[in-house]
Image 1 (cartoon, rainbow, N blue to C red):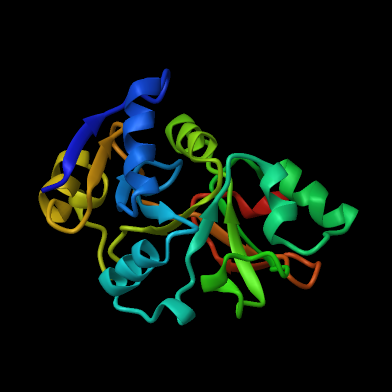
Image 2 (cartoon, rainbow, N blue to C red):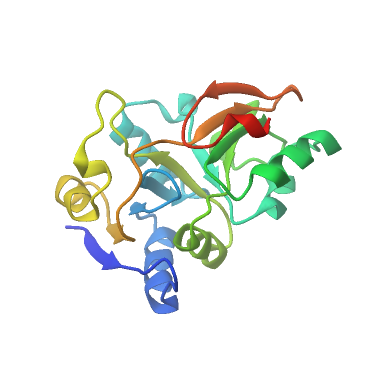
Length: 206
């Protein structure tokens, strides 16, 4: 059974954040709030945890398109090839915010992502997600728990999320009601912004 932990976004409790990070470090799976829909996440460096998430989503890990949840843009140079000034300005303007940016990956990607040419980077405008990544010391790999076919209430209400995911994850964080609109996905791998999916993030800024 998963633990159900209440964390307030206006002032995330450090002890609660540590409890969640300890579980992540041991290969646990968590459901946590972002600035869009609730996310299913694990430690980017833990192969077994990554494989669990891939199984839950019904995809092979090698082919999975998971996002890297970063605390800020300083994480980029670890996983992304050097970007030009124009691309950096776009990222600076949009982040933190409800966007996923597809960028060219570099040779330092964790072993499970080595074959990927691109990575999806997220810097959510959510203090709980931000505190988790900072305390963990590296990004969280994440995928939304949103049902692609229909928007169900369980994707926004933490208690209903807990009922549904209780046996699949180790922790469900109650960070208040989530959104039911996913992030806007923007491909910046060729320099020019290409909108792959229009979501919560305003596309007019591009």
